[in-house]
Every structure is written in structure tokens, then in C-alpha cells.
Amino acid sequence: MKTSIYITAAIAALSAPAWAQSNVTIYGIADAAIASVSNIGGGSSTSMESGYLQSSRLGFRGKEDMGGGLSALFTLESGFNIATGANSSSVFFNRQSFMGLSSTTLGSITAGRQYTPIYDQLIFQAGAPAFGVSGGALDGIPSAGSSASRYDNTLGGTRIDNSIKYNSPRMGGWRFDVMYGYGGVNNSSSANSYKSVATGYKGGSIEFGMGYQARDCVAATGCTAVQARDEVVAIGGGYNFGAFKLASIYTSEKNGKNVKGNNADLYHAMVQVPVGAWFLSAGVQKLNDKAAANQDGTQYNFSALYSLSKATTLYGAYSQQKVINGGKAGMALVTSSDGKQNVLALGIRQVF
Image (cartoon, rainbow, N blue to C red; front, side, top):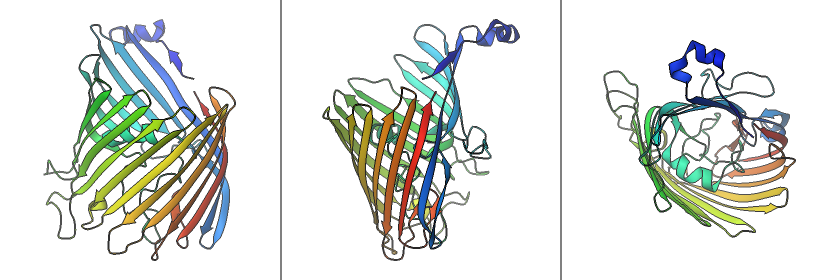
């Protein structure tokens, strides 16, 4: 449930021209869970986790109707830790921070820190929020002794800084998105730059999306001999049968994290079943590591959500990850001591 706050006369008096026809919506998610993670340095850990089902956040969304179907808009969204009250990042609006213009006939153009077109077209329709859990996206196998993934196939919700994005209006069920992200590297307009295009269809019971993205190497001098442009191709969709929904996503990444030859394919399939106030979900993810290490991974995800109201949900979630050939399993940003790890969580989420 969202709360719309219309700017009062007192604020309008301070900035009447800017706020005269505007409204701002405050929204967010508060999510807390008790999670048990196995196999951390040979042992296990049980702790309170913030944002296990969906990241805890506070956001401000504004829109000004300028007439003729044209609107100005902005979104500012900050992640926080419900258990401590601390920001989840040193960047205050670390989740989203963008502004732009929107037309009912021409689409929208926005600038700032934003989700990728692949995420917009595929992830929302085929995974979130049941697999928005911290252990619910197999973004790649962590390097030994580190929680940093060797891959980034966008299933974890990649955001791009310094980006400009165009979203077309939906036409006959279809919509397409284009994004360019400036790299912010001195003496180079291409270093660390990001490019992406995606399209998707929604109509009746069918959802479908596909997209492409590329990230150039960071150095102003270009890629070294062991580096190359990081590229991802994604395709996916789902069908709602009424009693249940089936969905799948396939991504193929070349030169993950700009490491030449660090290639992988990821297959993701899931089923969602609503039963009264319950929402059940199960899925499997398989990562085919094509790099020399050949550390393939498999992850199973199960979740059960129970709606106490429109705003409040109780949930349980379980994920199991296995990695072969000496790879280290890693979920919830915690690397396992070997190739296996389980995460079990019980929590509550409130949307406002």
C-alpha cells in the first residue's frame, strides 16, 4: 500500500513554481528474517537478516503533470538494514536515482542510476519477488575465498550509474528499451561504458522478453591482452495457466567481469502456484561454466508466502547450491568452505 503525499501550502510557498502541479509518493519495503546459513568456514550461522525476500528500502517517486500527456518524473530509492537502521551502502540513494520526462504517446527518457533493460524486461516478469531473495539468483560462482562473483548475468538486478534510458510506450503488447551508460573514466568516452537494448511482450497469459548488453573495459587505454568486452544475451518468458505459472530465463555471458574467456550459460526455470492466501514457488538454476575452471553450479529454490493483508506477508525460503570442480558455493554474500551451501529463512515483509 503506497501513501501519496500532496505537497502542502507551506512547502508550495517556498517553491510554488516547482511544486504547483506535482505529487510525491513515499513507498518502501521493510523485510526482516531469521536465516540459517550452512558451511561457513566449516560451521553454520544463524542471524537476523534484512531484506531476505526483498531488499528493505525507502523511496520517493515524484510526477508532475504538464498537460498534453507529458509529465516530469523522478525516483530516489535508498536501501537500508531493518535490523540496525543503517544504510545498506555508503551511497545514500544506492538502489535508484533518476529523473526524466514521460509521454503517453512517445514513451519516457530518464537519466541517473537505473535498472538495466534486461532486468526490466525479463526479471520482473519471470522471477521477482519469489527469487529476489539474497540466495535466489545464481549470478555466478564466487572466486575462492571471496563473495565476489566471477560473472554477472543480470539476474541479481544490476543497476547502471550515469545512464540514459529510453522506454517506448507499449504497442500491440510490445515494448522496447534502450540504455547507454557513461563510463566516467577520464580521457576516454568509451572506457567502462555500458550499452543495452531489450524488448518484451505482455498480452493475456503470455510474457516474453529478450535483450543484449555490453560493458567495455575500465582502463582508458582499453582492454589488456587478458581482457575483453563483457557481453550478455538473455531470453525468457512465462505462461500463466491460472492455477499456476511457468517461467524460464536463459542467459549467455562472454568475458564476465571483462575477463577474457570467462564465459558461462545460465538456465533458470520456475513454477509459481497461488493457493488462497498462499503463494508457493519452486525453481532450479543451472550454470554451465565454460571457463577453464569448469566450475558448474546448480541451485534449487523454494519459497512459501502467506498474505496476512495486502501489505504484510509471512514467508519461508530455502535455497541449496552445489558447485563442482573445487568451486566455492556462495549465497547471501557468504562464501562456503566447500562446494555446498544451504540457506533457510523465516521472515516477514511489509510493503508500504
